[in-house]
Image (cartoon, rainbow, N blue to C red; front, side, top):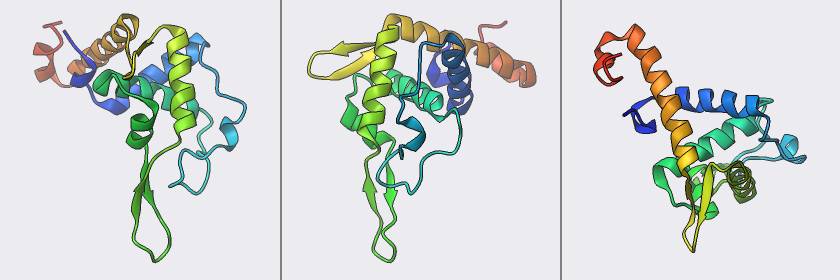
Length: 154
């Protein structure tokens, strides 16, 4: 059984982003074009589809580290604050982006709330990520024959 642990995260997030964008249930908030992703960044993201990529990354993070809340998820997407000549210190990412992304995923049925622990992946979300991971592994096995034993011998 192929899981999200078995494939490169960049390929999984890109494939998941395309799937979420195609379904049309995920919509960027009206403030998304102007929002910075955290206090550690100077400007807003330049990619037009950054919201879908972030939502896909949030779903993967919840799969790997769940149950997880908005504060810990914001710390996962944080970075180093550049204060000029002062030493750099770690800062959290935007909690409103994490919260809004998790609310949208929850409305799709891919996440579920856990009492006092945050949100965890639902059975539907696990099925989606595992099926995408299996598709990716099959494609990788075409170029790298050693991976066929992990792809179920297909």
